[in-house]
Amino acid sequence: MKCPQCVYTNPEGVKFCISCGEKFIKDNTPGDDNSFFYEFAHYVDMVPNKERSVNPKFNNIFSRVFHDHSELEAERLFIVGTALTTPKLSEVTDTWPKPWLFARVFIIALLTFAGFYIGVSYFHNANFIPGLILTGSFAVPFTTLIFFWEMNAPQNIAFYRVMYIVLLGGILSMLVALLFFDILRNTSNAITTGIVEELAKTITVISFVRFRKYRFILNGLLIGAAVGVGFAAFETAGYALRALLSGGGEHLYYTILWRGILAPGGHVAWSALAGAAFCRVQGSENFRPSMLLRFQFLRVFALVVLMHAFWDFDAPWMFPYGQLGLMAVSWVAVFLLIRAGLKEIGRMKLQI
Figure (cartoon, rainbow, N blue to C red):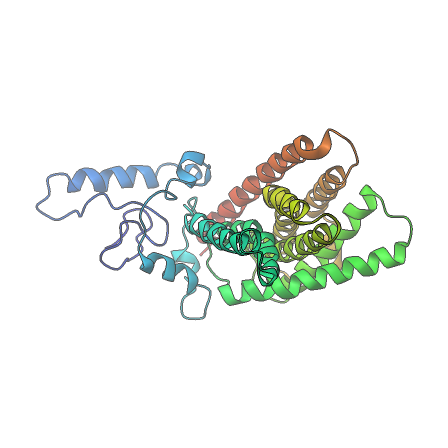
């Protein structure tokens, strides 16, 4: 079953193209009266305006979430990124991906959290508390990571490496931040916190991409998000434990709830933005420290630091309305960089 949108050859039985998400309306057999019409329609849609393919249509981006999907589609997502499964650049589509797996992951995480909640609240079993904290801390950040994973159109990063970056990158970025805080001693405030934590995460992201083959903007977005997920989840687990020890179960659930709601617009999005900005300036070049002084990187990093500083600003109106507003700003920037990443792929394909 060849997709009419991206010409990817799909196995029999799938309802959507497992490469670009195009829905298979019907098979165009030679005897079908409408076959010429469908071929012409796809030709007209693809050829005249190449720029149109990277303009986001939000009703289409999430159009596959509520559709049925086979296990084969999910399995195909998790095997990309190896030497045998990474598509050639000419095979990469520069149209907006249609993610759906992240919604399934979120449902599974909620069900798992509900199980731990029942074990703690109704059966009063303390053995469920560590699982409750870990599941509650990772549920939303990890779901957001799966969204970035699905949006990585080049499909050149294996999932095991993403998890490696989540765990190792998360703890490394936290330790680097603690080192900076120790140097600054008693000068910590909202601005210095924003600078220190974002600088620590950005240094960690750069350490993962500077010597690798991950030269695409969308690669930086995914790797940055992976570091941010580790940082955010480990930090939430710490705050949740402190809330439990100081205020009991009510404070624990309150902490997990609000940090979960705000997680997509915090560390995950900020690190993703910084990673994408760095890959944008590095491209296929070897890393040089002077790249960090380029305007394309500095403007994004400055935006991230300012959003983090405002996020931590101690004002009665900041929580939750100010932080929800900052979350919206973060995701506007994320979608703009996704659009830039898809355009980058389109330009590179024209140069082949």
